[in-house]
Image 1 (cartoon, rainbow, N blue to C red):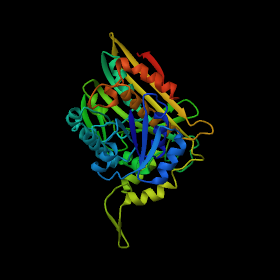
Image 2: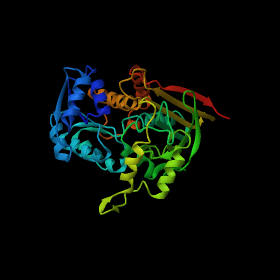
Image 3: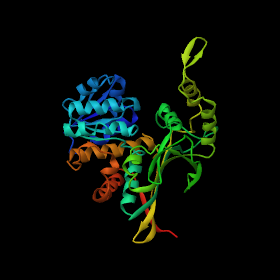
Image 4: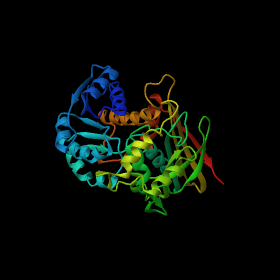
Length: 384
């Protein structure tokens, strides 16, 4: 079984290291556009199973060439290359696990082509989208009538500093994209599009986190796959208090737009300028971070109101080598890769994780996450 990992940044390197532990995988090729990234990945993985390769990711044909003799690919690439990788996987007839969950409706248009190729494409296989998706789906399955599903997630600094109380734990470009694009959600069983920064609310977690604030962000594939199973569904992203208000001011003033802007004869965008300025302000006292997940699903079971709650609070370990966000993003993708390699995922086409890790597969997957260091706590309540 040959696995190709596309992109050897922090997350891709962690995926390579995790996948190399699996007996069901014989060979891993770590691929990046830069030799230094590949070399660093090989050094960290330190496995005879792993080989490196430098290649272009510019076109479907470029990626298809890399995948031509692979069984499974894991795409740890920027959002802009997600569709390119999906189409390349179909050309190569190679299963694909993709960390990016955006533009699900466009990806699902490839469903029949992927089925005809006999492959599985799993989009959004990180923590959010990813873990949040299948927790919400399982909660809905456990109810006779599902009323509300709320998926809360965020990567926040362990030691925040003003003025924004946030540090970048993945690409700032992706962070600002999350902040500015309209959010898909489900209200009264209908798909709706809500403005960025909608639904600001206070959310409290146990120490060392305490009080936070959340706004509605894009629900990705779950807005499409679960809308006929639950009345209301939202994904929300958390930050420390005050962060959302300050970022929304920048958004309202136009600093986060991609509209062309000419300055002294040079063409740029307000967002490009904002990225340069904000990068220096989005730091903590250390690189240590916390990943927080809370998924609440409420409704009716056997005539009684019930609420199912799952919570994950993951802190970067002392003397850590990777951030918590990298860990909780990479490990679900690696485990899905293992399940495909072992033949435990039999569906073909474009199949999001919430359609896979539910019912009888749910608890085994949660148990494997726990064995890999991701502990999800569960609570059931009979509500008033």
